[in-house]
Amino acid sequence: MKKICVNCQKEYERKNAREYCPECSKLIKIALSRKRNHEYDLRRGKQLKREKHQQRRAIAREESANNEITEYDSTQGHGIVVVVPFTRDFSKNKIMVANGRIIRLKKTNDAMALLRDEIAEINHKFYQAKIWLDINIFQPDHMGDALNYVDTFADAIQNAIEINDRWYAIKNLNWQIDKANPRLVLRILQNAKEHHAICQFCGTEKPFSAFNEATQKRLNAQIENGGGRSGQKICLNCKAIKIPRVKTVKITK
Image 1 (cartoon, rainbow, N blue to C red):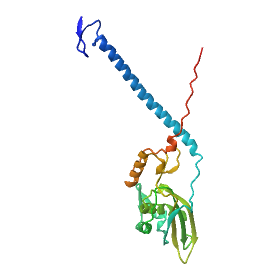
Image 2: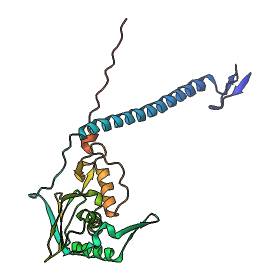
Image 3: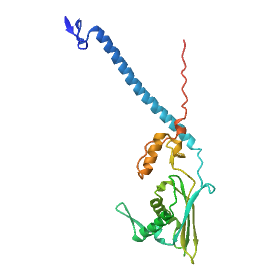
């Protein structure tokens, strides 16, 4: 029985229910085989890439245990000093939470606005990097808690310099009784001279130049937009971690 090939439209002798002539059947089998091999290679390639990614993450995680804590270096650092009149309106005891919302008294908002304006008026350039706060509270009596001032100070500083307070650390927190001249002295200090980011693998604070160009663009866009997600942040050193190959042993009879 003769039939027309679906692919080449040639007439051929049909011996079974196939739709293609013998020549086209061979070509189609080869094409399907190549397609299956290509799909397998893609799946295997993604799997290997994922496995290497996890191995690099594990190696970098072990190395992060050796990271030393960063300290403020006065020889390389820069910063500002702000002095405002003493007030207990900065204390977190003045803040209430109702229905899941933080409510501040008007006096607290006014005190924060005063501190924010004092910092902004100095117009000092801070970078997205670790920032140390040196806080000295000179109070007229021993009635308040110096620890209660930290959160409100951090919120006011964040509004002034536009650096998220997750980058802040406490260098010094001290108090002293001064009945003649009660005041709040705040020093904002920093070592960095450029923007930094935290590597997701090793957890180290590194300058933008330690990341590839694509990551740098995303990080800069994040700063320009005032926040948002910056995507994956893996430094060049972690990307360059070599994965040891597993040697295969051939078994000979």
